[in-house]
Length: 292
Image (cartoon, rainbow, N blue to C red; front, side):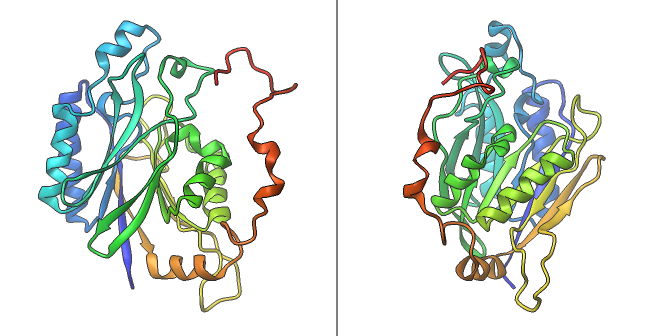
C-alpha cells in the first residue's frame, strides 16, 4: 500500500506569533514521530485566528511571508524531512491576507495560497482576498502527490474544489477556524465525492473561541475495489479535544478510483455551463457588503 499520512494539528494557540512558533514546532515534531508525511495547521496559526476590525491592529498583528515565523517552519520541514503547511495572517497591501504556505520535505516553499472567499459579511472584509487556486507537485517519500489548498469558507463554494480538481489536485489541504458541524462536514464530504480527491481539514479544538475541533479527512473513494457497496468516505473525524490526528490516504486506491470512476472531469459538459461565469447577481442573492 502507498499510504500518505497527513497530521492534523488540532492544537490551541498562545498569545503571540513567537509563542505560536514554539508551540507549532513542538507539534510538528510530534507529528513526525507519528509517521506523518505532511503536517497541517489550523487557519491563521500565527495569531490564533484573530481578525481585528481596526485596520491598524490588523496590520500590527500580521507577519511577512518571509518572516522569522515562516522561515522557522521551512527550516523545520527540511530538518524533519516532512512537509509542513503553516498558516498566517500575512502582511500585505492594501491589507493583510489569510494565507497558507506549504514547505516540502526538503524545506522548499512549493505553494502559497491566500483565501479567496473571505467572509465579507464579517470582519474578514478587512482582508485582501486571494485571486486564484493553485496545485503543486509535492515531493514525498511515496513520490509526487499533487496538492492544493482551500481555507475554511472556500469549502462552501463547489467552484473552489472543482478548480483544484481541474488543475490536477489529488489531495486538498484545508486550514479551518469555525465550528465543524454536520452541514460543514457534509460540504467537505461532497467536495471529496464529486471531485474524487482527498480532503484533509484541520480545525482548532474546543477552548478556542467559535471552534469545536472535529478536524477531519475524506478520501473521496465511494467504492473500494473488493466491494460493490458504497462507503462513507470519511476516514478520520477527531473529537473536540486538543491533539494530533493522523489521516491515512491510500494513494494507490485513490488513483485507481480516479482512473476508472465517473465523477471529477470524466463526463462534464463545460460548454453548457456558461452561466456559471456570468457576474450578474439577482434577487434574492443581492448583498450590500458583496465585493468583487
